[in-house]
Image (cartoon, rainbow, N blue to C red; front, side, top):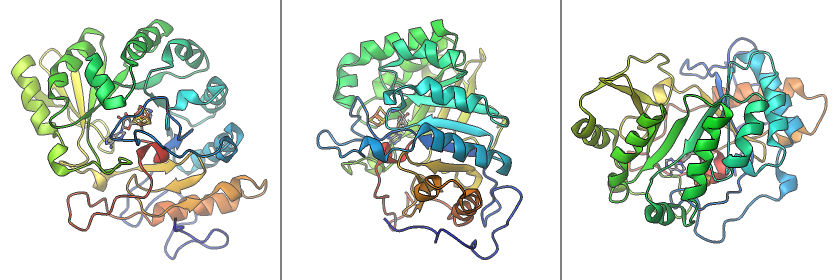
Length: 346
Ligand code: SAM
Ligand code: SF4
């Protein structure tokens, strides 16, 4: 894969040497998503191939020490929100050690984890005790058969048990991530919101994006935010947009009349690139300035050297600076990135 920058001396022309992490469009970056592994224990069709997924060797993954080092380095540059993801992050042994390392860093305003929930029953308590407070749990359906169709695994019961244990462990305001696919999970939209409302959780519906390993994505398979709002209003009454607390957040939030909320990550029907503040680190140490980026910066060699802080900062600044205006999913010229979602980190 092509590299975005020449590591080593120098930043691209115009890139600031100090101050916040900014790109040429003036977008200030404050959100880092760190993928902990590309492996997963289920096989969602919109992410992974059914069989034959190729994974990094375990020794190819960044160590917890390298991740904590990189995060420590970007906090003074204005990053204050860290999300751990994957692949399935709960597959990383000793994950609470990483949580403890990150939650203890000054400047981490928000530390969150995205998981499919399969292993959450036993992990929730130790993660909470290590300092994690924010959880997004992936749940597309409450129907066992459809869960199997989507994930090619029969794990719904474990996910539901994991959600209960997370509540018992002390997690509040859990968000449920649901990918919405036209012709498949329309029957799940209302039940998922009912499930969340009963538990004081919030569903985030995510429009299907062209990041699947098997290239099954098509525009006519995208169940849009508008489609879902219509379904939900029919069942629960009017939804009102919540004025954005943070206009850079990917989800557009709506409120029911009783105050419960639902969010939509409408990357396809309502792209939000103009406000994007996110940077990604893959589990093998590549920095990406966009989910859909076709180029990336390999910082692993720098993380393997002890005296490379300045070069690392230059690599981060340079990657952010070279971010494009936005993805082009809706244009004929769109080219999907080489890495599917599980190898990037959603
Ligand atoms: N395994 C964890 C999980 O599923 O939550 C974390 C990694 S997963 C890649 C992160 C999020 O990406 C999930 O919430 C999933 O719903 C979403 N996702 C995966 N493939 C997607 C796609 N093609 N379009 C939209 N969202 C997708
Ligand atoms: Fe695994 Fe998450 Fe991808 Fe589903 S979306 S296959 S749970 S990494």
